[in-house]
Length: 307
Image (tube, rainbow, N blue to C red; front, side):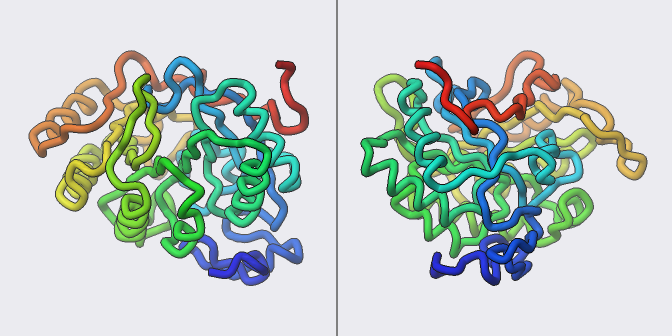
C-alpha cells in the first residue's frame, strides 16, 4: 500500500470505505485526514510488562474503525473528543513521553492515522527517540496496513474479541471480525516473533492478545481463547480481561448492562487453563470501575507537562 495519497480513497482498515479523507470527508472511522488525539500521558493500567512502575507512554487517538456498541472509550472512538495535531506535533509528543520516562510508546487505536504515525516516528528517531513502540488495537486490522508498520512497531497489543460472527455483527457491525482479526494476529506474530522481555520484566518485542469477557457470553470467550491457543500456540501471550464496564444502557442486549460476575470469570479462567494456556495475564481485584477509564482531557496533546 502506497502511503502517498492513502487518504484520497481510504482503504487503511477492513471497512475499505474509500472515503476521500484528504478532502475532508469522514471515513467509517469518523475521522478526516488530519490526526486527532485526546490524551498523551503515562498510563499505569496496561499489563505489568507494559506499564510496570514507569508507566506506558499512551497516545489515545480519536476515531475507530470498529466502534463497538459497548466501548468504554466511546467519546473518542466516535470522534466526539480530540484535537487536531500535525505530524510535527506528534513527533514532539513521542519525544516528550520518552523524556518523561515512559517504558514504551503506546499507540492506542492508530490504524486510521498510520501514514502520519510513520512520519512522526521517522522524525522522532532522527532526534534520538528509542523507546519500544506498542501498537494497541481492537484487532480489526488490515494486513496490508500492518505491513506498513514493519520495522516501526516492536510490540503488538491487539484484542481478539469474538470467535462468534453473530456477536461480532451485533456488537461491532463486523461479522468478518473472527477471521479478519486472526489474519491480523498472524501478521503481527510474523513481524515480532515470540515475546522477549528485558531484565526488569518489560516487554521489548512480541505480541500479546487481549480478550475481554462480555457478561452473558462466556461461550464466546472460551471459543476465542481455544482458537488462539490452537492456532498460535505459545508464540503469543494472552491477557484475559474482566474489566467490562457498563457505561451505556441497552434495551436489546440487557446482559451488557451489568459487569462480569465472579462465576463467569472463574469459568473462563478454568477453561483457559484446561485448554493449555501457559503464557498470559489474569486480572485480580476490582477492575470494572469507571475510574479505570482515562480522562480524555487533552493532557499532553496541546502542550508538554513540565519536566
